[in-house]
Length: 361
Ligand code: PEP
Ligand code: MN
Image (cartoon, rainbow, N blue to C red; front, side, top):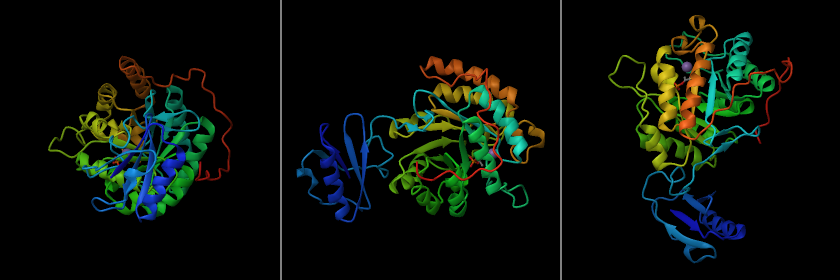
């Protein structure tokens, strides 16, 4: 159920409705919109009788027939923009470009890559410290040491850090260092991890499971939001099909499908979506053209020596070319991409000791 407040409803009136819902043993989620605030009710099975229709400031009470509520455009008509304190956004006018290696392998490796993608205009830097690998015998990531290196990158270049939590245990550490917590395709239906991610203060980048339907994808986001974290970014990264010319089939049609049903931003990962370096730039162009809110792209300074996903990692100069191309396409859609930092210089010299970031923002 959804309580729609009147356009001029006061904060006290919104609070009173939330208190009534909470007192009845349900959970109220007040989601402010440009025109009016809507209050989603979770924790109920079916319709509940709360008598909120008669409360001051209430416009109407709507039954939500879709299985997801908080992710739905019924709750919030305008797009959600996830904002960061250095003015970077995901879901806003400027496209979010997230670039970096699949995995953090060494300090030298990530610094070499970060310098290049930063100069090309990336506002976000990716790199896994915890890697969900198909084989237990391949590189599993540097763990907390990798997170510390990522924090150094933020301090030095000012880019926001996107890194994956593979389970509840790693999330405890990841949330202390990351600006955005990635939940991988293999974990899209790890419900305890989704609920835990819903209780963190950091935004979550949720990747689509490799065989997930649109509804399952949105329900996974609903798990996070139902726990009170409304800063969720969806990510299409390809699904399994019979096609074997690519690692996965990048389902770009899901972008407008998501945008029709949900207010959440959606970015596209053409690296895992194709698995092949030579297809990453063409699919990036297509992703921007179809209306994605950003890209997450794997870049490596020495892809042949990469400890994971080298085949799909771009060389830095290929990433620069990708940026030049998608900038032109973004302009057609009236969107922008952060400019090349021609005179890029590092903010400070790399600190030797980096302390975790406070979780609360
Ligand atoms: C990754 O981003 O490196 C990754 C493992 O992605 P996915 O979960 O989409 O496979
Ligand atoms: Mn990868």
